[in-house]
Length: 135
Image (cartoon, rainbow, N blue to C red; front, top):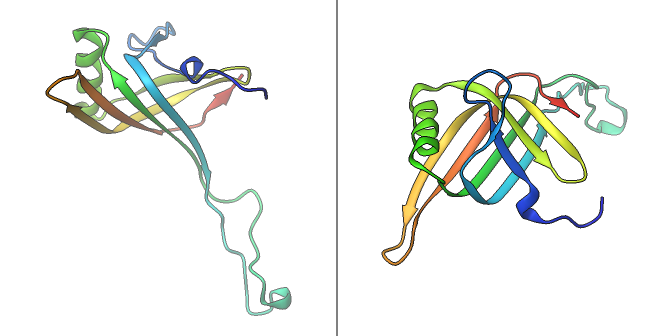
C-alpha cells in the first residue's frame, strides 16, 4: 500500500437503517485497530516449556477512534442519542486504497472539549458488536 492522505480515512454511519451511509462529522484524526485474543493451550509437557496457542480460537474485535468537530446539530444529536441509548448500528470505515470495513459497532466513549479561543471538539470510540465484512 502506498502512502495515502489521512483525510481519506472515513467513518460513516447508516443512521436510517436503509443502507445509505453518511460521513459522520468533520473528523480530523481516525484510528482503526484490529484485535485477536490468543488462547493459551500450554501444558506441563509443552515442548521446551514454550507457550503454545490454539489456532483459530479466541475472539476478534475492532476499535475505531475519531477526533474532530460536528458538522451540524443533527449529527451531534444522532451521536449523543446513540451513545446514551447504547445503540448498536451499522458503520463503515473507508480505508483508502485498501477497502471498506462494514459492521455493527457501539459508541463506547464520547468526550467533548474546547478552548476559549477555538471550537468545540469531540473524541469518539467505537467497538465492534458482531462479525465485520471487508470489501
